[in-house]
Length: 216
Image (cartoon, rainbow, N blue to C red):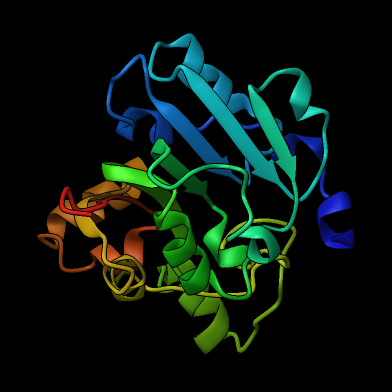
C-alpha cells in the first residue's frame, strides 16, 4: 500500500483512450473498472456515450465517489467474491495495467467472470516482459532493477509474455476476440521489415479483448 501512496498523483489520472476504443458502443453499458485510479477512463466512457452506469474499484481512495456512480475502496484480491453486485450484472469489465500488480491475477480473472453478462467483454492491458529493451537490461546488463513506472514498475508482482496473457484468459473460460498493441514509428518500421517476426520483442504492452461465452 505504501508504494502506491508514494506514487505521483498523475499515475492515477490517465484517461485510457486505447481502452475506450475497445469498448463496444452501447449507451446502456454497465462498466466496472478494477484499478480505476481517479476514474478518468470511466468518466470519459460515460461522456462519450459508451456507458450508462460506471463503477470503480481501487486500493487508493481519491474521493472517486464524488464522480462515479459507485466506488469501492478495497484490495480486489480480498473482496473478489464479496462485491455488492449480482451475477451477470456488467456488460464490460476493465483491468488496465492492473493484473500484473496482483498476487493471484488468475483467481481475480476467474472471480470477476461471474459479474459479467453472457457475451460481455473483459478488456485488459498487460505489459510484455519479453520487450527488447527490458530483455537487454536483464540478460545483457544483468540488471533486474525495479523502476518507478514501466514494465519493471516496483509495484509489479507478476510478469507475462503474450502466450501467458492468452492462457490467463483462456484458462478462465474466456474467448479471446482481439489482441492489439501500439508501436512507436521506429518500432513499427522494424515490425514491418521483419514481417511481424519480432512482434513480441517490440511490443511494450498488449491490449486484450476477451468475451464471456453467450452460453454462460
